[in-house]
Length: 316
Image (cartoon, rainbow, N blue to C red; front, side, top):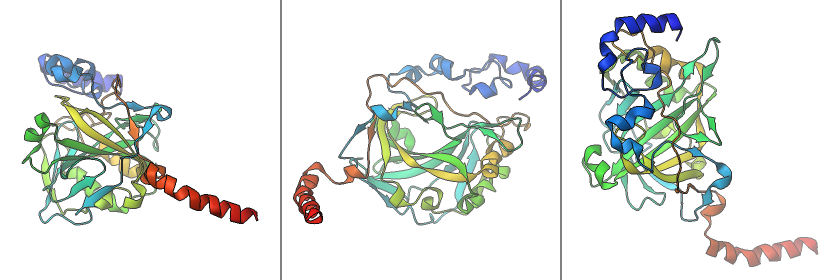
């Protein structure tokens, strides 16, 4: 956003200077008094905790966890029986789900139901065909174009409000990179224009969740750590899973998010750069599943004699 436009917005919304809302830096033009990420802790003490998200994952420091087995995606391939509710939350675009899709295995210790999904993204640049990245998590300091979060809660809790204080939240994170147009996303992205301003809601025909993420056979490799919600109140003890395999969207599809969605009612402040910066890892460990780790160490030892026999046979 240019300086002139920012000054115009400042004059139009100067009454908001005393606001005690939380915001992203890209919103401060509209609401100079809002609290950007470094000040969230002023309003929500939990945002100053020691297990905050997102984080930067340093790949040469992660530890392989042999117990991180592939997920089971229950009803992910089905359309929920009722329409999806899509809404502009004022900080992202969110789709509320009916909890029929579930995940299990993946070392979660139980079954979790999907209750909502939302996105984080960057902003357009001065170049017509370019965009600054906006994923929340980073890999070796590198940020992806976007990030999709599918939020799940333990089966026994009726809603996320009750699940949060009982360590009952698990989030699946998917990076989004620029590639070919993704036809599976066309129905969802076409609905963005129906919810341009905060509070706007609309209904859409549901999609199978599996159509929005990479194929199951590409989801064996993932990172796991314990963190927090990435928005206030930043509640901790959230189980985070970040998949290595990214979702691919066309550049024009990614651009639709900041071109169709706005932080304000007058559609003068595009919703962009809605991500929290990486938080200190502290004494936490990031674990990784790998295709190698899908066979337990004990089973690997059992395979060694056969491998040795085949090797000797080849040398004779």
